[in-house]
Length: 276
Image (cartoon, rainbow, N blue to C red; front, side):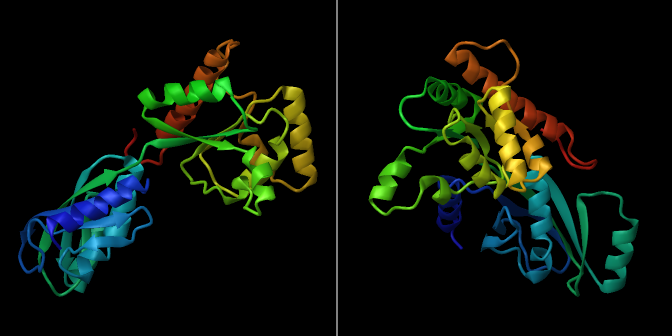
């Protein structure tokens, strides 16, 4: 593996909006095939994408390590002890440092890894019925300085899609667990969009609707068997209550609510994990 290969793969992951972890060996002791400078790239789901740590033993724990670092969003140094079975079990039981990991093997050495997360900007998916939408425009304008990216899903493309035998853009859109979805369809497609999102797992759903209209939408969804937990997770009327009236103020209140939800969730992280 050349440095060019490593950085090329990393650049492709960033360009495609895929979070990943880089793990680099910084020190070794005893019998180990790894040397300082060995490194790997690991996907968000724990798959080794590129590189080596010198063998299957240290690489067997990299999935767990990568997930912990991605969840915290902060780099860490881990020490991996490559021990015989009895020592590995004894070490696992007695150790109190969560940055030390014991692996059963015949190698007998140990290594230290610098593990660094690479995340992509939060994505806000704004769903509109088509045409110019000032609230959507302001969300897009304000999101950049906040480190977020916006993708607008224009449902008016569905009518064109039907004419050309192209799949419904709402059905073909790829949502992710980290998406913040803002529904600005103003009653025209609210229920259809919520039905689609019920099949996904996203970080936030905000619905621009009056309480009367959202109550009607939720009644329809309940009759269709949509779970109460999903309905209760929908933020409506969307946005923090700052008395917003103008489209710019509404856009600002929506972003404020997304940030609030994100930070509250981070502060509720389980004990032993790092917070933002």
